[in-house]
Image (cartoon, rainbow, N blue to C red; front, side, top):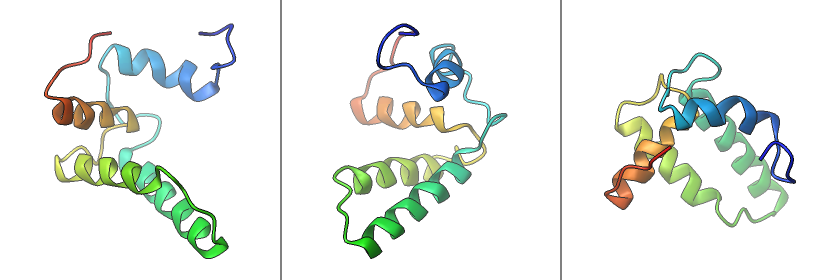
Length: 91
């Protein structure tokens, strides 16, 4: 993917961590990412801009926090998605 239009700094840094199932919060903790998403959602609401998937994203992050993943990196949302799908992703 490094040569495609899907290239991003976040993907190049977090992608290998997620595929190796390293959900440590060394770069950023899920708690911080969830707060950032909440701020974006608040600004969008105040501006009258709909975030089509914003509520679903917040729900996934809230589920991750309930699961005790608050100190993990944001890639740990994969664990929530796996639980919702009742299936472990393969790397």
